[in-house]
Length: 126
Image (cartoon, rainbow, N blue to C red; front, side, top):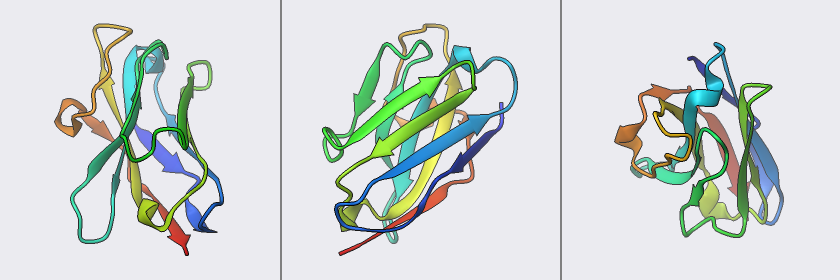
């Protein structure tokens, strides 16, 4: 599966953005999907993840209540709605995938994911 993230941009604090990650192939429904981000000068960190079925979702504490992950298996896409954006959300956002043997598997560990997209940049000004 190949991943293509999009939807980033320059916004002001308090604004919203919706990131999308589209995939190729016809096995998307078997993949758990994760979102990670890397801010300038920092290591890449977990943002959120959704299981293959969509029934299990995890978020980093820093985004809980502000970000919402969803997926549309018919469109082979995963989305992340980001509300109440803060300057500290500024980063390059990456989507990642892992073929999962369980429809409920989800992980916050980036080394669990073996497919990565190219990233989309989000800049939040104060």
